[in-house]
Length: 98
Image 1 (cartoon, helix red, strand yellow):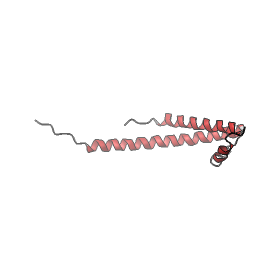
Image 2 (cartoon, one colour):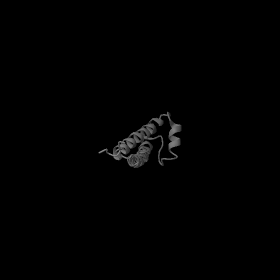
Image 3 (cartoon, helix red, strand yellow):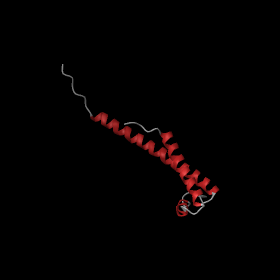
Image 4 (cartoon, one colour):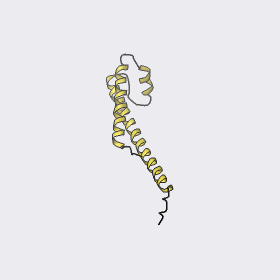
């Protein structure tokens, strides 16, 4: 099985989620999505429907998704490598006829 490159996955997820949360905070300043910002502010300290709150929430979200992506890739690679090794060991070669 192909391995997942940990750093690009973690960076991609972190940037995507971080930018999304930041933009949501800025958009919520006009009233759209304010309930979602209130919900996420219970997880991301300092996150609010303001310019500064959006930046703070975006940083928290980046860190959160970066760590989650790195852990996902690490465990995926560890488990897929183990399964490949078990599959390799369970297949016995045919004896060669002479």
